[in-house]
Image (cartoon, rainbow, N blue to C red; front, side, top):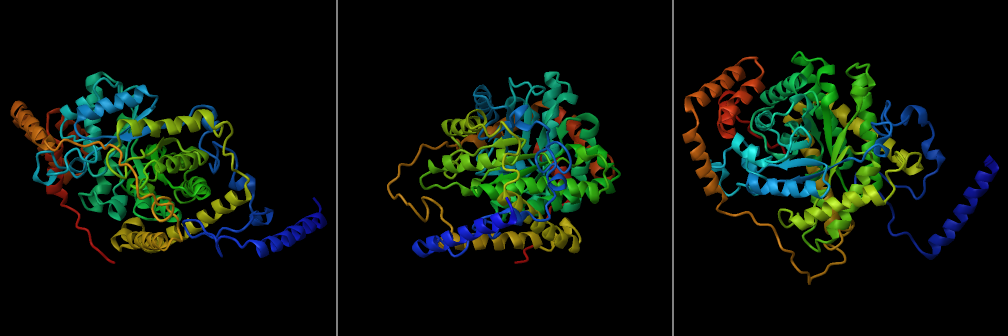
Length: 554
């Protein structure tokens, strides 16, 4: 089209626009994404002036990975369908896992209860009222054996959402695999092992940042030698988004944390090649479809550039940002919970269009309680419909070249860089966390969003618009309140039957390693195989490292 034709086309559009606006004004004076990025009425090639597609987009599987981390993406195989599950006892959760695997789930994702996450055995007074409530209760190797009974660990990929006690749970997992006769070199999965985001947004930390980074580094080193296919960390933006961050803040703060982990590993004597290939990431997917797709694409491009430019890594494969996605738990509503099926489907579609490597879809009843088996199956079927029926997986990065998506990808990248530069000015992610920077930014964003919901500017269907006051309450999954008593009895029996002196010697070896420089992982593995419990191991580390005291700067 010639410049004269373009000018004529533009003029015709503006005349038609003027007539239309005179008859029917637009719904709002201005439009913006959930991150506050203005959304124009229409996007044209002029919005991409200066964009070099070869440099900024390239091809899937090659630097800068904007279009995906594999050359064939879902034309080769679908993402791992990994439903997050865990409740009550190990036996109950094992039955749920086996059911989901029978229904076509392709990976396991373990949810642990709060005592397990915080390093307390089920019989500890701090566990009262929380045993098995938001995840499965695991205190010993015997519990872990029961959790994976009948599931060959060499053949299934397992993700464990665990942070402060990640090394202990990984040791339990390795010990179970050994008992099964598995080849440890073939074990596949992920320990979340991301403590920095706990200080920012989630709160299930135990130790101060310094010791936490040391434990993370020990896991990096141990897995490089013993579990080469294991993802040693899942650097998580998910929980920051759940706490109220914007999409821009989510990737900026996540990548800033990733830089801190890499710097800690390098300072501890590791080479980037020893851990860089096993870094993985974990993002949220909300309902603003185009912003989410652009966010995932921007995150890949950003990380590829950071690895090359900041760390001087020549091998482009080490800059592949591989990520798991979970749909937005914070978007689920207790009102009209069936609507959550639609929200989750849109969010899952965003993740797939954005090129995720694995995906968890939330169940419709999670705003009310733990997911029922029926709701979990519907959530899994949502992924399967997208994979098998939508055809969105037949071509790679199908939204590439969209004037809007490319413009939005670039703007998210630019705004994320600004945040990361600010964090660098504050001395890096840890110093910024200690100063309360990320926490304040997230709280401010969450407050701004809540004001929009309360004013009606942001619509939440079933909550502030299209409200239904007469709705049936679905049946909910309840955890037996007697669980803590039966768990305590089981732990007493375990301690009575084990060689207590043997267990104590193994715990003493952990303390010695924690006070020195030796890698903690072999000592922790030895202790769990001698029937030391999670709480006993965590108590040893508390004794050496102390407990982090949160400071509030608001």
